[in-house]
Image (tube, rainbow, N blue to C red):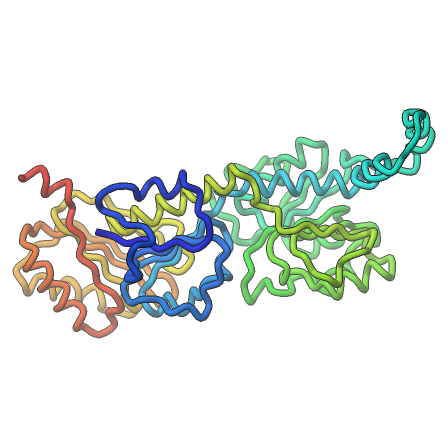
Amino acid sequence: MFHIKTFNAIAPEGMARFEDENYTIDQDQAAHGIILRSEKLHGYDFPESVLAVARAGAGTNNIPVEELTKAGVVVFNTPGANANAVKELVVASLLLSVRPILQGANWVQSLEGDNLEEVAEANKKQFAGNELEGKRLGVIGLGAIGAMIANDAYRLGMEVMGYDPYVSVDTAWTISRRVKRAQQIEEIFTTCDFITVHVPLTEATRGLIGEKEIALMKPTTRLFNFSRGEIVDTDAVLKAINADELGGFTTDFADSKLLHNPKILVLPHLGASTEEAEINCAKMAARTLKRFLETGVIKRSVNFPTVEMSFQSPYRITIIHENTPNVLGQISTEIASLGINIDNMINRGRGDFAYTLVDVNVQDDAIMQRVKRHLEGKEHMIRVRTIKNTEVFNEWC
């Protein structure tokens, strides 16, 4: 039996995956899995029972990832599940930045009288704008969102340049060959008419765009931030805009300093605020968490490597351990000393930590508990689980 604790309102389409006899939801404080959206868990007293935390969203800065990693708790996110929602909002913001659509609509609402059509026609020139076609867009970060924006902007007739030194092979295959690749991020700053940022918030990306970077841009460049507020130095943006050294700024992160400026559009964090995105994120988070709890497979984790292996043996041992030499030898030796043959085994490391799956042909629960105790007593071990393959056992019964 697994106990799931939720924070925030998680779409029922996702939580439905836990509606069977093997799960309870928000009924037990000793949770095995946590699923959340924006709740801040820094300072939260995690029960020792927690094996994994799944965020129904891409960013995990509201989760104490480093603390959980040391405790052997796997943290998952849902990259790409809300990508289309964010992409559509960025494309809409690009259009709003060159066409004063909002201003024109608000002005019409202020009109009175019977000759509205004539008045609107006579004054529409004050809301004339520009077109995106032929302009250059720079996309910093070519993950799921950035790649979609790059492709759609090209389809709108824009010249697109992307920068991402860490772009994955899978993502690279999805990007149009007509999207130019910037070798240095400075190429984006110096040549683009529009710049949009789509990178995760880390110590390396905090303040990624500040005074020095803005100084490289054209005075007409429009900057967009739909990643995290801390990635762009808002004081530097204000200084540049007030000095006519930046054409405009659109952000999805409210900051009182940015309000009431005609060159700045502030949105109330609408990026993933669509029904479809919330459902997609909830489904992916629930599916990933459930698979890990039932099989030990790790996919889409932000703190541990991807480790997948077909589960066909009666039992699986999962081990989170320090990524040091000879640990695999210790694991194999300990299992062999108990007279157990290993059917299959896989190991992956990531930084200071590693994850190992070991499948064994054992049918006795007591023996597996003995294996668990022996491994837990070894140096460098952080967390050991044994998982019974219920499908295999049911076939024998």
